[in-house]
Image (tube, rainbow, N blue to C red; front, top):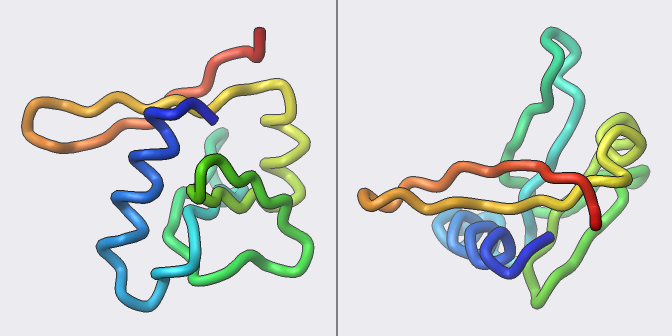
Length: 90
C-alpha cells in the first residue's frame, strides 16, 4: 500500500464512528470480476491484514490470493473524492 493509499484509508475509516479501530475490507463480491470495498470495524478471522502507518486493509482469502503481487494506490480528486488503483509490485 502506498502512503497515499494509507492516508485515503485512514480518512475513510475516520468518518465511520463504529470503525475507528477498523479498516477497509476488500472482498470477492461473488458477482462480477471485481472486488467489493467496505469499511469494517475489524477483520474476519480468515482475512489477511495489511497495515501501513496505521491504515489497515483487510483482504478476504480470494482477494489476498488475487492481489498478492499488487500495490494499492489512491488518487484524490479536487472535490475530495478518492479512487483506488492497483499496480504490479516493483
